[in-house]
Length: 475
Image: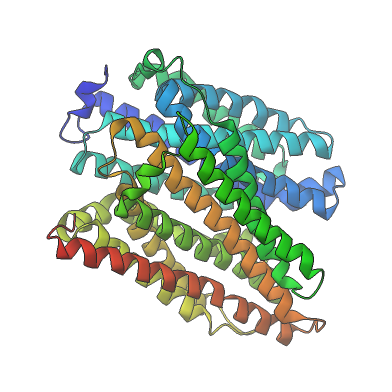
């Protein structure tokens, strides 16, 4: 591989290694701000285009659906066609359709733009993470690069919360155009700073598993739909059961297809790695908890306490402490105590933060919320990057794209399930009583979703820690 010199560098001191890392961090930063800014700008978009609530919701959710549904196919494409090639192609599509969203005059244009942009991100993200593993040798250099990469993505999301509010105050179209400018710069620097792995020539005759992608995506969507049905469990129970059964059948069909195809979307043998499986379960549960919490906190602050969207964004900005801690403190902790132990500690901090928030009431000040926000930020620093390390550590080079796609799919699918569960339980608990006290109790009950998800995540992580400690290896 032409980037072998980078892969063999002991750290991040080489100019080309630093340049490659900056480009790839720019891409994950781009993905982070793109998601966060649109969520904040959604009301301004509806005000100008006159969108119905269902259409506005679809504008936000279609990005996530496209992202999660095609993530595995994106990782497979990176392995088969070449990581840099797929990365640049996805970046070009992102530029085109994000720009289209900025020029949208009707709802359908936004729907198309956001879905395709999500699909582009599904190809760009696993290719970018695979380029990290290709350009840095396994060990401290790669771990440090992944932690910096993960922290940059988290910082992009955090800053996007604030930037979205500021840009929307001027013109919501800037929320689409600003990522385009950053994406063009990244596209121009990529061929200069990132080595081409040349894999496309060796795999030109291999195929993609589109049936597997469709089956897996459909199974995930129906699973999320089944969870949303919890808000009214006694209405059309046949529909709820039918969706659940169909989701399970599609998942089973996916497994059958993968075992019979010569070039499967997911080589099921990769799941023999206990570390990979536990990392993916941890990612799913961690994301489910955080996104459920964020959704509920936004409702609590804006609808019960009367805060503005920008004030809400600034309140959540404390979570961005992970952008400082992840690249500085976390690498030392991983080296000193081992990745599994750092993950367990991060999950414990996350569980504590959600448990503390169960004390919320109608007279809470930000000072009462601040400990939870800081603890969540620290948990991100100790969990997000280290989980990514666990998911890709020890995986063959040819399947690094698949491994990174699996963990990113778990994060996205977990986010969808967590949001659906929190929303459904809050609606079910509220019933027909719209009083502030009733709404507060409904939110408090729904906050048990992140508490329960993190508790399961801790059990998964502790089990992995016990297995690896018994083998005499915790790194």
